[in-house]
Image (cartoon, rainbow, N blue to C red; front, side, top):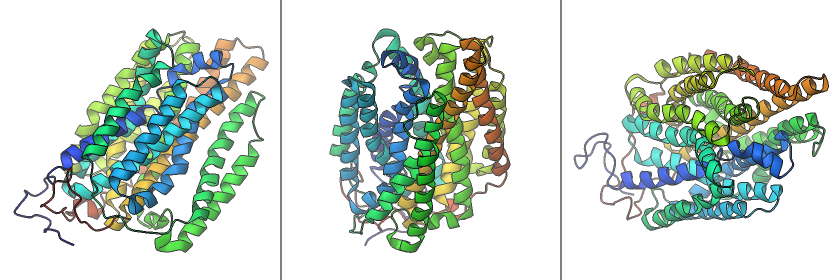
Length: 502
């Protein structure tokens, strides 16, 4: 295998290999499109609840099923990226997303719409670790902070602006156009990617442990399904008793962990990454942040429309400033990380996010729209200060051979946490609302109390992140140069020989 020294005279120290910019740009653009769809349906939930005659706990499966599918598929992504060429994985991901988008656009009943979302999520699940692993392999360590800042825009701003885009579409068109408008954009991204993308790792044959795949599916789906079923039980119509899927998920998770530890280098998801303290702490804090982000993203549209009486367009526009704030700060925070490390950013970010969530607990039937917008912006500022430094700290702490497994673990935990946050917020809201209605309270007031109860839980959980943020440190490997990719190859045109990842 050929490779140049870390700071070859052929290239300035810290610069990107030739063609890497276009490669990353294609992946970032495609990832933004597919991840946007995680939350684009949130503002449509009230209308879909009426059209399909379902309750809030059932309607939230349009978001929860999406994230749950990602949590089930992502653990397999490490295997796929080791076994297959980058362009092949990209083609599979985008083809699945296109198919799911089409199914959702023509869905005649609610559960076909959910099916379309699930197929979409398969493609989205492959894009996140694909993007992480590629960046870790082509971007020098001293520039990873700012590049992770760009990625944080994708994983945080895309879902944060989803409700805004959905609201604008719903104001003029039906909900089906949220899918019809995405189809041509995704098709163009697919074509460009298949044309330009080449492999930046060397595929190698490795065994796939089918038992691990099955256990991971039962573990993550059981836990999130159980949490969601608690909300359905509050409405009196659970598909299964909540304790059953929770028990199955917990047992499967224990068995999955035991099996991965026993498999060693052949593990589907190499959990030895958790032996690195910086990685473990960062993953926990990212998970708490994702619970807050997705919990509020599904709760606020319901609150704004059903309690404050706002339209879907107004709701989407009210959530836009927060998404823009996170986007503007993403790249800036990445550059600050490269200079100062994670703690000066993560600790203030955790405090700001917690203050915002506690501020949101004051929401009621008389709350002004300006107050809602202000607290949402403050929350997103806090989360923006956390995402990029935490992701860079988590993945940068691992050795190169662990990149694909580390990115798969981070992506899995993000989605499980997002699904759990969504399920928790909706469950608390639903149970509190039902209790209030049964006691004779006005329906709008009862729903307002339900929103308040859910936000109290979110604010309480945020305190864990505040404490943990003060223990975050810059991992030593983030300041060490990583081996360069071969200089003789344009990464967008040729497949260079590199050390296998995973």
